[in-house]
Length: 98
Image (cartoon, rainbow, N blue to C red):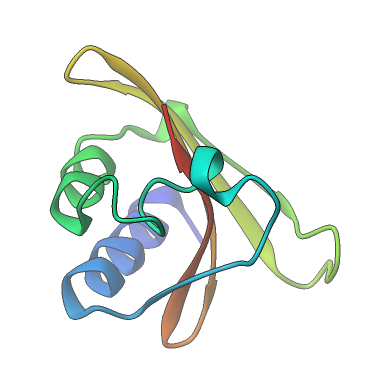
């Protein structure tokens, strides 16, 4: 699946509320969306402006059949790191931080 399709799926999940968060250590630092420190709208804006050269994917360390996506981009003067995977019908966020 190409980045345009991945991005569209992620934005659709964000807009429809189909998002969950992977449990992890340091969630207060590593997932600002899960802790409510940033909004879904902000993440949607960040993702929407991201280009393909700011995206990479690799197999999930726990289940190699799942593609984990990473965006590293600059938005409103901050460098953002967003890491997630898609498990229909949800996007599962691992990290959202700057």
